[in-house]
Length: 273
Image 1 (spheres, rainbow, N blue to C red):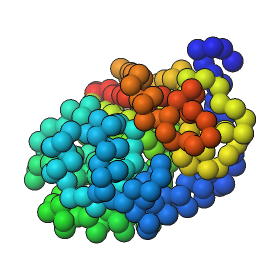
Image 2: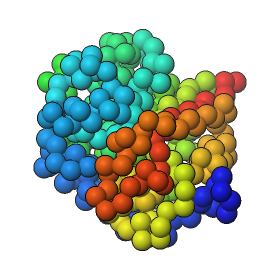
Image 3: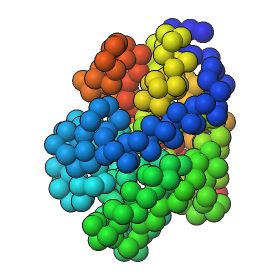
Image 4: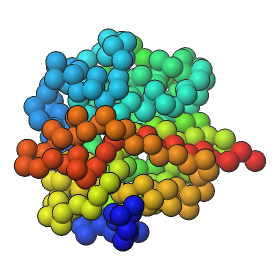
């Protein structure tokens, strides 16, 4: 273990995968049903949720154009802003939540495009499907499934986005292998997530609540780079966002978790033939 690589993951996770999955599913089921955000009470579309979305990088147009029920105050960035979406693209959102990023993507790809959201929490899928009509869209669908085992056909997607979700997985290497499988040759991954910058205290990494809150399961940049490369991705780029400290420090009432994690953009491409 070195200063530049605070975790020696393969994924180095001390939590049982089943325990992690249950903690994550329970937390996000509660968020969906209680309309509270990941970081405290904030009804979907409330002033607090809107403020949090603005803090992590969504524009006023983004917040105005999408019906408020889709914004649950989740995320650590704006993946659609870095995805370079084009008319007619097929887009896949890993961990789609209430559908906010899916509806933003649908606006970019137009009627000729298609957007698929995958989430493992039935309550989130129900919430997202209820948001389709208010957003007046016909090219978005939501599928129940795990991001480690995507219910998506091989080589059927142009762009994959995700917002602060992959850190929740107990098997990130499998997530990236699945992402590679479903991408068409020449397709790309554009993700907002958190990355580890210092070794987490043991009580944080082993706490199911911390893992479900996007802290305890974070991986280091070198570990993520290795996973993406091993999966087959090229042109891998992971860029920390220095200004994310301003909102990450509010994620935990007991400690400043910005000492350990930072938001980042994570990108990679599937080589064309």
